Length: 317
Ligand code: C5P
Image 1 (cartoon, rainbow, N blue to C red):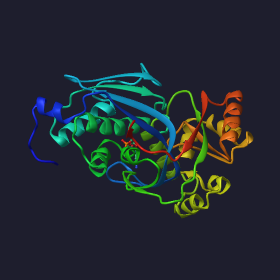
Image 2: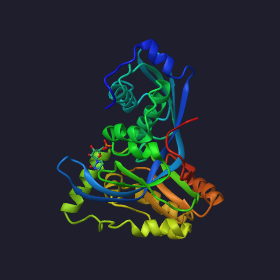
Image 3: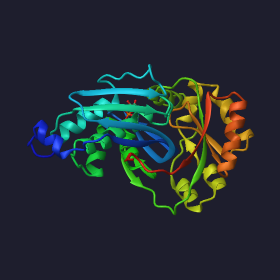
Image 4: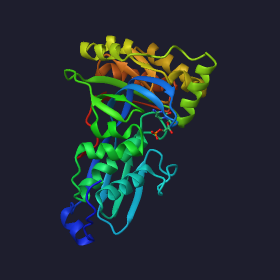
């Protein structure tokens, strides 16, 4: 915590930004999502490689006399904009940490689908921390923001950092993966409706208890070696997700989506996080475009988008 000194509203206005602050934040996929046992705190120990891709939400923060949130795009009308929203919770958490008034008018332009396994809610929380930090002039370090982020959700610290990074603990302990810069080309098959993340973890526990889950992924070394080789075929073979079996039980139709991606020439495909989004690695950008068209024609998803990664985490634009 910082010192107890609290600026009054005039002082806060002088320190902060006068114009609107716009922050862009990416979606994430897990190139390797190794899920360990259930911990006493209700979370699972993770061993994951996060990867930020070029599907973005944008959060604009303006000065206001209260804290308010509006939105447009994906999930409008479905996503609660009250105190339960992660953006509002993030703004309160930052204000509490820095000792400032949580006053802002926030507007979200959403492209990341809700409950899609792409960490859209966590991305928005990360965007809110970065946007309000600039608007209020609180000037926290990325490390301090990541500390607040960890309390908001396991994926939020990664979405502040972006890039490709290792996640341990329950996913909140993030360290960058050092690899020579390579751009990977993805096709992102977005399903109708979402899947519940807690339910997917519970389903995996159930499958494991019944002995019917696939073998756990284990070490991330193969994935890290594949990233260093910079060959999409090698990376495709190393992709893996322990939650995929659970997602397939909850949404059996995803098997057809994965099959269609392969048939369309994707080098590899997995369910993203807890699903139902599926992501496919393509040889190059042109191939990704072609695969996306084929997936849409095959009617195995609501929408197929191309994306590349890695990209930066939440940043003021
Ligand atoms: O951290 P976050 O709030 O995003 O997690 C949502 C839910 O996903 C948790 O309440 C928990 O049920 C499940 N989860 C888990 N193990 C993790 C991360 C999430 O079981 N490492």
